[in-house]
Image (cartoon, rainbow, N blue to C red; front, side):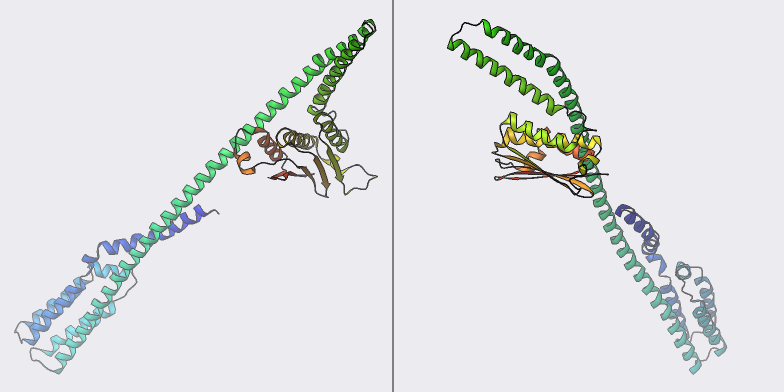
Length: 392
């Protein structure tokens, strides 16, 4: 149950008592009919004490008033609040009837009955005021509570909507990065196939024709020097294209020894980037057994390969390192890749939040797709990229 649902339930539970207290608070001026009861007694008392000849009729009118009092707002409110004053009213009626029996002459019993009636009416009046004041305080307190809960619920709702919107933006950005990576992979592989089928074949043909031409060149030292330079440049171009093709599309990644593929990647990187690249694997399996890296799925292998390749190329392009190292530690549950360099480093927060750095975003997108944890730390002494990939 989330916070929004809890606040909503509390509001529903507080709504009924709040409305009830509001009803009492809004009608409090109409409820104070016990003041009429007190006034009626005072008139009765004045009539008797003044020895008026009509005090018997006044007593009878007072008894009738008591019957009518049970139909007032106060009486109905007392019933609602489970306050039973019927016994008190009956006692007042009994004392009033006893006054009738005393006749017109004032006596000790008359004063005793008047004192009791006064005590009972004062009790009802006092109790009514206490109940109305209590209801007013409860209404104000509950109203403040409801207002505070509404404010809290609004804050939670705004926070929830903001978090949801940010989550949607992150998901959209992740999907965008994933789509871009897919398009890049597709276009990259197409370019590499074209390089292999056209440019690489043409350069090979040039090398063959040049070798056939060499014996016919005049036997001069300068001609042979230029011919050797052309041949060397052509071999370099062929090696570069082969290296690019090899890095782009690892052969049989699902069946080949993944550790050897990664080692070949490091070797090729050192060759065409002219940057030393150390490679080391700490495997929990016995050396006589296949590497634990081979237990990764083909999809995870490909994404790990691409992330490692992107990290090494980024180091070569932007950090100007003197050395790059790749260390892989295989545990019983996951493979952990460490790609480090001793280059110039960068500000992680700025680069990661910058939408123009699609390479890093693509790395994070690939890691998310295979449920791997990717973390990057960098300073002036270099950069370390840590990728933890679960086997399952």
